[in-house]
Length: 425
Image 1: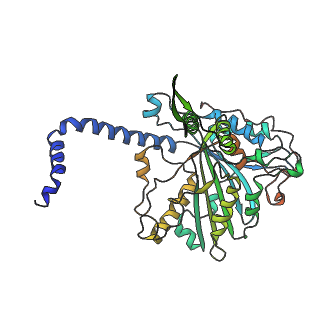
Image 2 (image 1 turned 90 degrees about the vertical axis):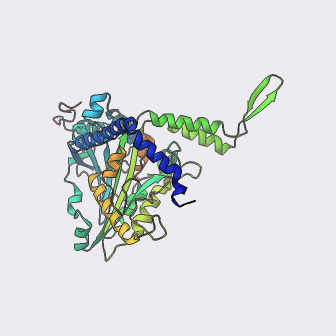
Image 3 (image 1 turned 180 degrees about the horizontal axis):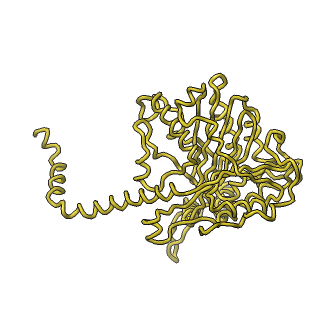
């Protein structure tokens, strides 16, 4: 048997495809054209969007719990848009818009920002004022303009970068610990879950900067269906079919209290609106004080205070974070892969970039040393999001270092056009 004979079946299939090209060429061409067309229209739609960055300043004392922020996220969910017909899908290229909720520290000086599609700014401000009447909202210049746009520019200024994206360890219907578990029967026993990350941000060196963004896109009803399927799967786990004189019947196992609590927690989580979420943070520091432990372990540890061993926790998305060693796939050129990941992370953070909606768009942004197709979103409900991002209460000890309102505001200015959404709907 010759070497070519080993590939006889393969050559036969190839010859068959060539002979009957007129059968498959049309459908395949149509599918490829539709995918490329959709990718192009979506890029045009996103390029035409206008965003506004808002800085949130807080009064010297906030007595409201994160429950007020949960109400805000529940109201914001109503702004979800999605293409509803062929024109919106294939001509407009419409995609669901997203918001960015950000906490940053510049050498220990802490700021809170929200980046919103400009056409939704009025509704967002109205809902923030409704839940926190004493806050102050100001339009801000993008703080990323204080840093060079490229790694070469960072290096020229003696700066280095580390960054990562977080994902959930288990399927997203499993909830994390929320602010409800931190609330005590009285103020002395209550904790503010945001205090941990603010303490880390407060203690950085004056030459260190940490920027955190939570990209949020209102999720559709399909995420709840996935959660319901998981609940049904867990309920039927270890169920045995028995025979009796009256026919077959299902014998359900005796569940432990822990297993029962997991089911209750998942079912309770699914009753609240959900957001597709991407959590990304970068650390930029002068090389004289640069230490990735500040971000890699410190910030990640502040997120994992919300971990529940029976439910869910956060972890690094190791396919995108800015470390690559020879033991990591694809094993070759680890230094080059790490530098490429840094460049991609810096670009994605600056653009507040969500994962692309189509496979074609994903591959448009790949790089030879780091394919940009491993970003992952997960769904968090409004209670979980309010736990991670909310105005710090009077329980937080970092008050002097957070941008605050100098005088008490009784409410939003009457003349402000917070309800003006323009002609966009």
